Length: 485
Image (cartoon, rainbow, N blue to C red; front, side, top):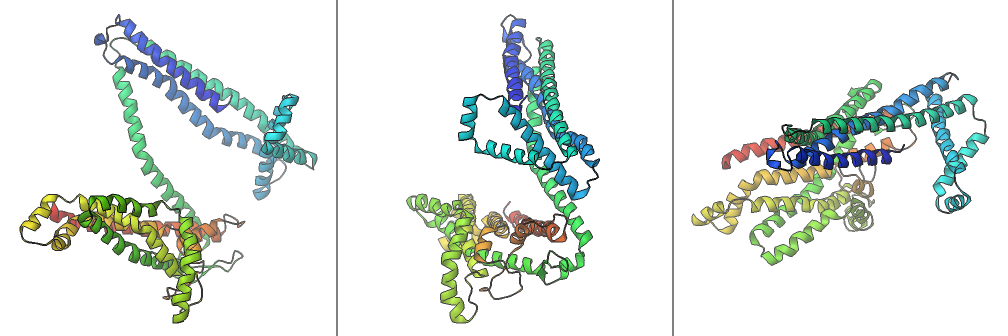
């Protein structure tokens, strides 16, 4: 039974239970809802929840456990051939592919001639799968592999039937149990509100659990990397030279320097321009100008980063090379730190200006009036009253822009190049940590090699670095906020 049919049955039974539960509650009090402990709809909700939630939980657990159980049963047949390691993984992949192809062939045998004609015309993907299976079955497939494929297909079919029956029984049992509990004194409201509370708590835990999962995955893989490569060399070496065949030098400093250099130039462009734009929009611009200028600035945030990267590669890079780098003898490449930093700074302007504008507008008007009443001019009020009061929010805007700059990849790939080096020349090509994370995880390199696992060490280092920025920003915000509370 397909997942869609199972969900349709469970939800449909729950909807029926909602109306039956509501009707049963009203019938028990002769149609007078004032005699009920809870609202009639809450009785229906309790039936719906008892019908749907246990069944869906069983379905979720089954879907998570099913592949592992089936693969463990089938793996024993393949291991009997003496295959180990990567050879075992390849044979297991063949087992999965052949078993799925057998399902396709069985499905094909049940089609009419018209359906086959339509399938040949409109379903090229199915034809490709059938062709692949035909080649596999026609070639020298080991009998054990083919037997394992048939066993896997049988287990999948059996599991599908048991899954559908088990979920349906759970739904029916929950339906019957909830209907039997309905009476005028049943606290249906507590059940309904309890589920809503659990849903709210679960939603709140999603972000926390996601963060914990990300950190743990980085920590475990980083620990595996440091068992293969010395941590001392990773943190102290000034060379980045992955060989993929031994003798690699995987020092983080060239990548960290490139990340900080590009981000510094980007913030040097975005923070002054964005903050000045926010001050103008909040304090000087008329409503008509503000209604046009602010959306126009925020359009920059909606442009895809690949477009910024192409702009850096085609326009900004050649211009900097022809008018600055070559005349000054600083370089001849259009890919440089300055190129990526300038374009990234343009991209970050709305992050600073929009948030800073909202923060400045949130400063109480009484503070402005008090400053004007003491004889301060508009510019003096902005410098000495409004900006200090808005400083915590402005720091948050700058932090958001810095985090965005540190995590950017596409602009750096197209604008700054991929050279890992330590240099003060802003017109030389460099790279960042995020670019190397992508490059180390792509390709045909074995995942268990140090050259691949180093991506997780780079990611964990970047995470710790950005966490430090957040702690610093929190300290600044708390220090200055106390003066205005």
